[in-house]
Amino acid sequence: MTRPRTTPEPRAVVLLSGGLDSATVLAIARGRGFACHCLSIDYAQRHRAELVAAPRVAESLGASGHRVVAVDLRSVGGSALTGDLAVPKDRAAGAPTAEIPVTYVPARNMVFMSVAVGLAEVLDARDIFLGVNAVDYSGYPDCRPAFIAAFARAADEGTRAGVEGRGFRFHTPLIEMTKAQIISEGVRLGVDYALTRSCYDPDGHGRACGRCDSCQIRRRGFEEAGVEDPTVYQGS
Amino acid sequence: MTRPRTTPEPRAVVLLSGGLDSATVLAIARGRGFACHCLSIDYAQRHRAELVAAPRVAESLGASGHRVVAVDLRSVGGSALTGDLAVPKDRAAGAPTAEIPVTYVPARNMVFMSVAVGLAEVLDARDIFLGVNAVDYSGYPDCRPAFIAAFARAADEGTRAGVEGRGFRFHTPLIEMTKAQIISEGVRLGVDYALTRSCYDPDGHGRACGRCDSCQIRRRGFEEAGVEDPTVYQGS
Image 1 (cartoon, each protein chain N blue to C red):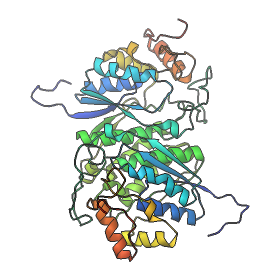
Image 2 (cartoon, helix red, strand yellow; image 1 turned 90 degrees about the vertical axis):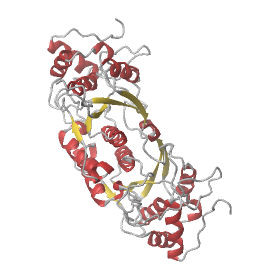
Image 3 (cartoon, chains in turn brown, yellow; image 1 turned 60 degrees about the vertical axis):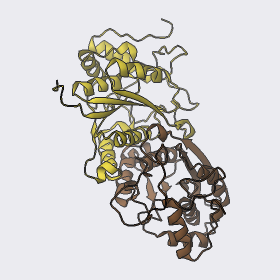
Image 4 (cartoon, rainbow over the protein chains, first blue to last red; image 1 turned 135 degrees about the vertical axis):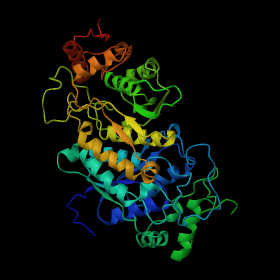
């Protein structure tokens, strides 16, 4: 959708991890005509390659700005993504299960969305985009639509914008999409997935392990979408 | 309430800023028989004297633990408490007003409560205590009961504990109390308010300015409670 040049684009905050999903969300938000202010959270994650990728993704998709906010979730603990637990490899990732995996970071999306709300208040943005996904979500409770809806109500009750009657709109365009659908949509919108990083346990060069849940789901997504996988894997 | 020694105390997470209110909340939580795990957030606040005070307050009231989690809200901006705006002095603090002051930190309590939920998940605690106050609250939207209730629902939707049917209880024992009532309750429970810090703009020695909203409300509270004010003010 092209807007007339005289109309300023409305601002949106886009949570951008540097991974495949959030890069696609940024492309979607740009496609809907938003001036996108990207927000990456440095939460002491072991897969820091995504923080290196994020500004490159932001720039490549025409974001209006990008900032990194540090939140030391390692001091909270309880996850393989921030602590000393090992990242599971070679398990049946994405298979239906009632179990929440050890890569779950307690309250991570709640923390991220809270910081995004704060930034939206500061920027006078009403729209917040995030790449949560309830299909290939690996069993994380904070990726479910019921959580997003409940959080949105809390944001409207707890902010200046909400009290003043403006409130926020949370956009989760990927929430019902498969990984293959996400990739197809991103390719259509011009996302360069070679810039993105998804692996939970990359090596020192940012190369993907190919075996963690995130790698398995990503690789399968490229296969199912019929798109060549641009990921650089360890040992390749 | 004294529990038999054979029954382990249930765990609670207590958000402890190092100020007057949260010190009182910790004393109340201890009085209700909880093993209290205190959580302070280093959000790059200019009034860092409270972070120095927090572990002393925690120890003095018999907390089971205390940790500091860094969240760089300065990178989000938008507040006199983290940015370059001046802290207002000598205004009619606590007077009824529709205006949200510049010391409001966008989404601060939402971020703090999210981190507290994460820690509660890790510690397997169901009870979270916080010192929000809707009477002397200086006009912050995230101190209102409607926000706390909405956030609690979001926490139950977005966490392992909530999904598994355990969920969280948010305790805000001060929410309808005046500052004088809070102080009277704290004195009854043995809080040493000389250890606490409330000033938004202390000097390098941690001495209170006596003129910001927080100082005015605190000083008036001691007067109205008929309790000697142990605060060390600048120039005294």
